[in-house]
Image 1 (cartoon, rainbow, N blue to C red):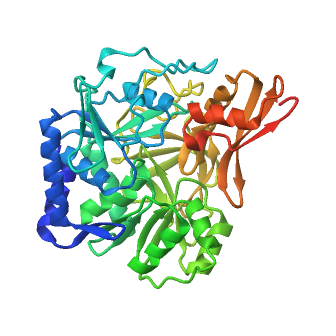
Image 2: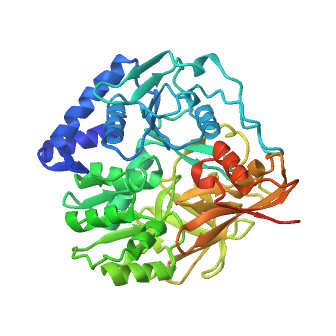
Image 3: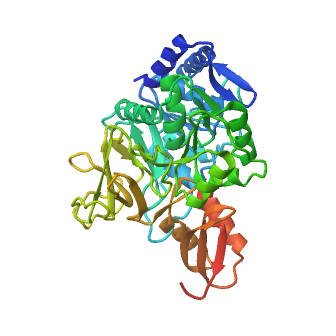
Length: 497
């Protein structure tokens, strides 16, 4: 379906000269955005991109990302956003999960990684993480997109057959840290954005700053999709520095800001911070726990209460505290979404009891793909479906644990597995430990997440060494094999774990 492109045409017809996208000192009107999208669609078509093809966009928060995604929508191709900092091994697994017809990269995009033929040795006692190179891993065409420095590599691959036609595939991590591509159809994608627009009262007059990554679901669900659906103005930012964000908030009167606790912590530390005079601000905090001290500090400096938000790639926005009065909770389920808390046998728990969080609604993605999609993320011993799966009546097992109070507010209390959040992204500690233990001079390792008052949440590791390795060498080894946010920031040596 051409859903995203149809939304673009509708808004362009209604408010053609209004600002659609602002990036640094430049902007595109809705009419101008539509014109550029049509040109890129013709270029993709000339390369052989057709309906049903999966195309990866390995780009950051730049206008080209938006233009190319909408051009692919016009061709009824599937958009697959990929983090441009993805390491070669993880990219290899992504390409195994998503059989791309084409991949668009920046000039420094790792062209060697595009062949998906890495030879990294998999960690012991982990699932096999590599596959032999195949003939269709080699691009048949590699062409520079006109007027840009972007490269489009086209592969000789048939369109994937999964029984559904996803509009996009958004990557997250499964319970063991491997990439999982969440497929979103027109139905659940429409539900995701309609739920958000209603809950946050977004309109064509809204001004949304998108500084969170568009290659993750959070940036789509609270940024790009609401803009396309309502005709709001999107201010796109790739440089996520506190000074830059604060400058945009003040100068552009931003009333909607999807952010993370780390972003708000940095903003609250600015010595030049002053109250913002904005009507009906909706500044959301998602991706990890919002500490009360951060919420209070931001309010003291800027005069705005933060809205706690519970979001997942598989569901979109689940709940939010629209009143912005209870940062310890993530608010009530938004319209169109239901939440239930169960014990280990799947029995619904009473109010105030902690248990597993299940979610139901039209926004729930019907399917995911991954290199190990046929395997269970966590073998269920409780008679329930595994984490990340949907049961027979449509309830999705999130893997999170929490409780509901009498007013219906949800409080997150932990995870059923060893997955944690760093910078709003999932990290499986088992994967980090497995990588550390493949280092020649490491006998055993334990990974954990700590929260630093200055740096925020980060991965650190305790290591039992064989010999006298340097901590920097171990960190460098992890950096070559893990995504940047998974790499331990600190190594602590010990005699035993």
